Image (tube, rainbow, N blue to C red; front, side, top):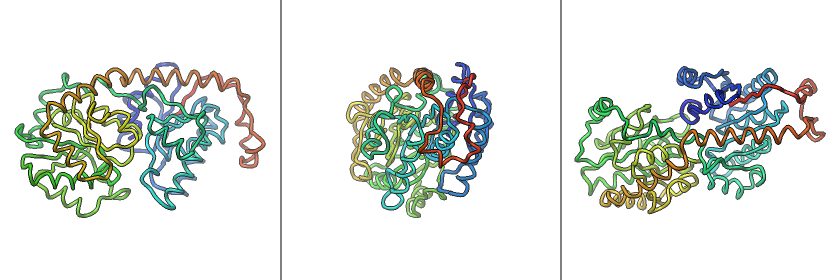
Length: 408
């Protein structure tokens, strides 16, 4: 899913720019489309999103075998699990340029023992990496405040984002009118109603509980209000409570649509995009909504605040605060002209800073600079790490690879 949705087009761009790109991920239904679009080799390593020690160890050794064979010049990881295993394997195998992009931190919403465990895992990932790329300034600030790594290891690409936004797709002017009409029919669209839209995973971390509570409160005084929920439930990883599930399934004014690739069409039909997430890195959905000139209300968290400036390019509300969220939604209902003005401001900012090709060019430039820097550093096993590495791996620290290889 990360290759298909979060990094779409980036691997193909790097391939056409001179890198031999190998994509590595778990298997999934998106694989066929990933291969078609990216036109790069893909290797399956069955990584999980959960804490699965035995499976993780198997995946680590599988990655080590791949790196031994492919001898990559760069290993670039995304997502927490791929970051931990990818950076650890790359360090063991002596890959000089080890980049980890941080696009969100699960530990932000945890407490107690789990917070401590996840913090240790992040520290280990960053220690194994040669450079860390948080995809937003506020995320960088959080990483430094938590002392997860050193200042000199961190860099942000441009203004943030892992992949930018495809402005050829998220453009109200080029939508297919027939498809738009079909979607209107499917959701029984009525222009006399006001539509709120959320897109993403339907889980607690995304603020769905607060959103449903705020919507139920507003229904009492706004009878022509509808809520569009676009996404899938994750009952095995972060399930919603039964009460919230019942509200989604039985409230006639809540329209649930399973995940679709036609997000931009629903954004065209909605009046306001509501994003109450508890943790983010640099959320693509806000870039998408902004590119579609859809007014935004979102939680005041890392990532969101790097895109939306309160009362300038959208509205921010206090995270977890149902009353504050309801007040912002009610403001958007009565102040549509003002919301439109803020949406136009955000639209201009996104077009100026976050076009996909702009982000890719900056990443490509960073690859080149990092390669140049690393070539000056002799490849060897430090005495401090020698006891950690089996003897049969020592040959991996031989420099002099001629072909540029990148593993995502």
